Image (cartoon, rainbow, N blue to C red; front, side, top):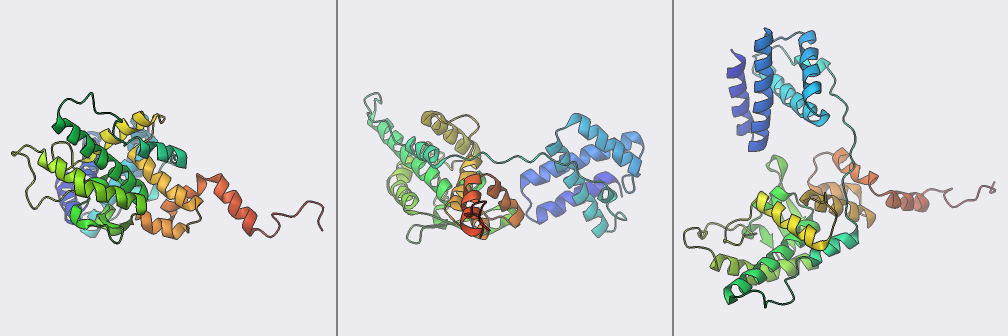
Length: 324
């Protein structure tokens, strides 16, 4: 079988396992480029030599960042593991080569005061004199309710931006303070909502969302089956791009530094929980991390929390040097 035919089978298998379209596209691009290189250099894709792999790795290092190289190698290894399972190759030739070590980057985290400023930035203008029509004033008020509910929900539940975009009205239980979301790997989990988030969502669902739906053009007004929780000014589901745009506008309005992204809110959620004394495994469950090691990065962003835990727990933390 040709490498191209094997790649097609591999991508179909990824899609059948509910891999995200982004993953399928990225893996397809990485493996196709690799197969093209092997063909140009005259190597057999089923059993390339170690020298050939080192040569390809050196080319990747010259052209790409370390994080990109690691992602491409992950795609190639997944491709060969699939090939081995299907009997197309004898094994993964990349298994014997190490992945380039990536520099450890600690996530950007907002202080609680900064998070409060971001939330406050969702407040509507104090005066509507500059807004001519009554319909426009209603739209501005509805969008302010949506933005407050959006930021409060993101921070209360530590959601990914894709989870916010996919949230539905039917998945929201305001009485219990819960929002069901589907995360990576199609895994469902419950996002918990505190009192401020529940109040913001209640106001948005009661007043803001109906106003956005009412203002939608008839040609694009969602039907009865459409229950996206967060809508844009046209009454359509607010997608990932729209979410990023709105949060960036709010960041600027709040006077917060550049570099704060939707994922920064998720990082802040985790760090603030740990600062408040939450157990690491509880935070792991709330974030939807499969491995605890993924969550452990947050233990490195709060030296104050670690020092406090050390001082309280270590038997000699309070002793002076002269004590025998």
